[in-house]
Image 1 (cartoon, helix red, strand yellow):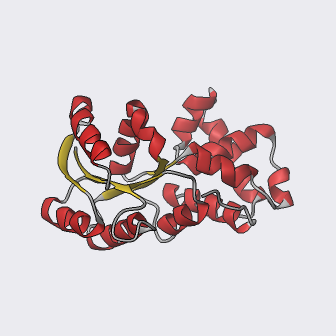
Image 2: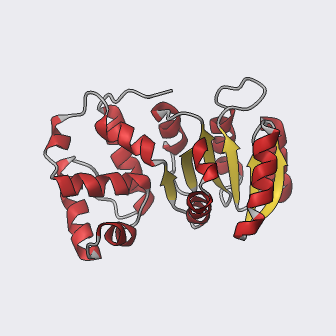
Image 3: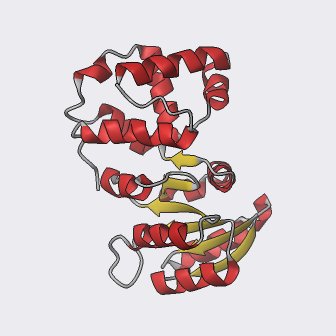
Length: 221
C-alpha cells in the first residue's frame, strides 16, 4: 500500500517516512505544500494521502482544499486529513459530498502507529475514519436536540461507533454484541433521529454526523 505524506514540518515528514515502511507501507513521497501535494498525487497516484490540514501558502484550510481536489480528480486515492485541533466545520466540509475513502484524525494519532496504520488501511478499503474526539464533540456539544436524549445508553454507544465509521461487525466486536443486535440498535437509532435508512455504510455515517452538526454543536479550534 502506497502512502503520500504532505506536511510543512520536516520533522513529521521525515518521521512518517521512516516509520511507515516498518508497518508495511510504501512511501510514495513526502511534500511540504499544497501545490507540491497535488503534483505528487498526479505523478504517483498513491493509495492514500496523509494531509496536514494547514499548509503553505496560507496555513488555513489547504488540507481540505487538497482533499476535495484529490477526490474529484483522483477518486481512487484515499485521503486522511490531520488536524492539530478538532474542527467540526472543517470535518463536515471534508465529508459533505462523499465520505468514502476519507479520514479526519487529530495529529496526535501519528504517534499511535497502530491507530494510524488501521486508519490508512480502512480508508484504502473505501471506509470513513473519524477521530473519536470529533465524534465526542458532536455527541456531547451544546444545543443537541431532544431526540438524542431519547436514545438509550447502549444506543448512544452504538451511535458513537457508527459516527467513527465502524461497520456493524466492528461495532459488534467492540461492544461484545452480535451483528444482528447491532443492526437492530442502528435501525432504532435512525428511526429515533429521523435519519435516512440508506444501507450504504458511508452515507449512514454522514447522515449521523450531519444531524448532530445541524443541532448547533459548536466546534473547537
